[in-house]
Amino acid sequence: MPAQILTIRPFIGSKDFAVSRSFYRAFGFTEVIISPKMSYFNRQGVGFYLQDAYVQDWVDNTMLFLEVADVERYWAELAALDLPSKYEGVRLVPIRQEPWGKEGFVCDPAGILWHIGEFTKG
Image (tube, rainbow, N blue to C red; front, side, top):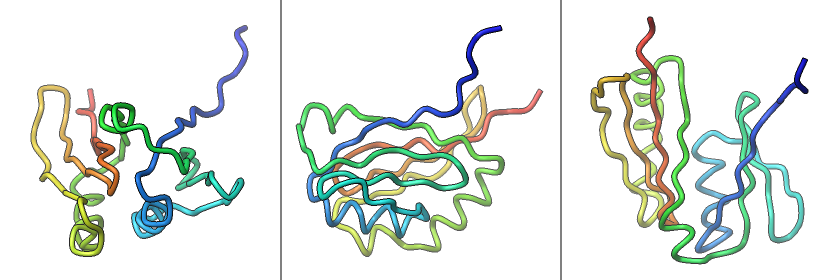
């Protein structure tokens, strides 16, 4: 039997570490400070490391997919946070239907693109 995998935790960058930390706390993640230049953000057992590091080509090409059980409900909660009015550069792109399911997009303050989606069941 192969070894059990428990999580995958990507490392992402930030243009302004303090702003990104604030954004991800507002986004609903809990922050655990690892060091002055790195934090771990977690929500319901899903997490990632945020670094005080910015390489434009890297950040501009970083995408994360967050699978949720009910994208319409999650999106309503996310929209209610009104993050674009609170953080420069943050954008929400409404949910769209795809052949595999539904997804909306969130662009964080550094330009990292989050896909928030729900796969079609069956």
